[in-house]
Length: 295
Image (cartoon, rainbow, N blue to C red; front, side, top):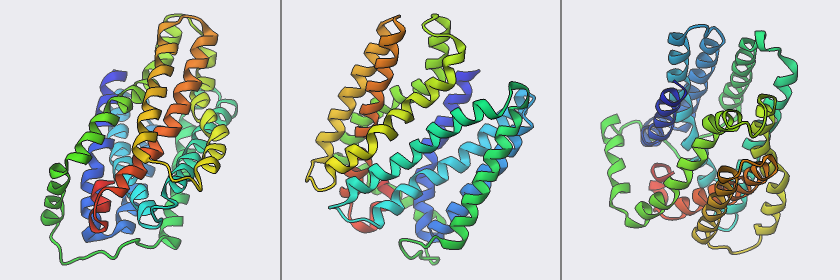
């Protein structure tokens, strides 16, 4: 069931950005982001009452819809508001902030909530997302002006441009395998760790925090190093993918707890390098008016 829910969720999260960024040209980034955060809040509230498989399934569908609409719009906003010189730095800061939350929240909530009250965690997440909704509503401005005269169908048809770009296709092929590995880490590595008795179940919250913890520890240092460097984003992406692969090999081929943790740290460093480089490279490929769709 973990595999089914993960497959549905990840499929939606990675497909819906195509739709959301296409529709952004008609409705604007702000309206779609507000829809995204409203949907996410509802999804977390439903999950808070998720004492049956049907409710959990419904919550996953709702949350995946919201997350799928939000993900690329934020990345495209950063792309539109930065120039090529500082874009690598901007995306590294963006990814650092994401991982700060991913590090702080699991650890803190583990100590704030006993297992019988885990439903309260999801209500708290809904409250955080409502705060994000208000921030977007009050202070966010569309990075590009929407064109309401464009039909929704025409906006979606604009996606065909990405399938005609071989450079874009190549980078997707390079990175899709890496991202497949990274997605396997989140739902299945804790199961692998406990089933093969590498570490006990009490380590799962630490495992969840180890990846973002590595990124926030090294992220600012890495961002500072590359800030004024003219680094080829594609080369940095490929280097990151190789490091991620090495980390997974170390974590997966050894039953030693120390090597398992070392492998997680190494793959986390590779993720820290590769994902911002991927976003930066993709943002540099298209003409400016097609940037949102590519992102």
